[in-house]
Image (cartoon, rainbow, N blue to C red):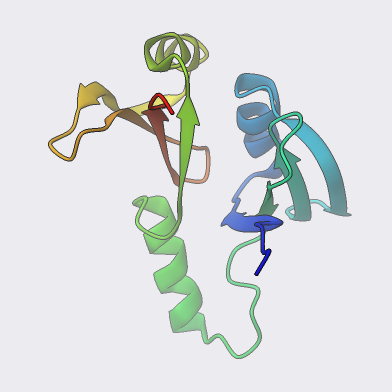
Length: 137
């Protein structure tokens, strides 16, 4: 079976702030920007990547109650609703660049007990962005 990832979704609470993080700070390309105001679906991806991230307005599914929307907003705010794991060949340089660019640091680069070396940021919506040092093949 030949199946690949086309896109995954992360909520945004401020499309312009999300663009500043993913496009300007991470250097990703914008593949689509649909909608207006806070009701925008913005597709971003690292240049040359087949997989993309769609930044979407949160809690848009049909059938959600006001209680669901409140719970989702609270989870987004505290960083427990959505996350993405990224990889880079030079974790320390990536960390320094993101920190210098004003990214919200959650964890500085550290060796983890499971063998990874990683750091953690939050994007403008509060989504957890974990970046791991790429392991040799």
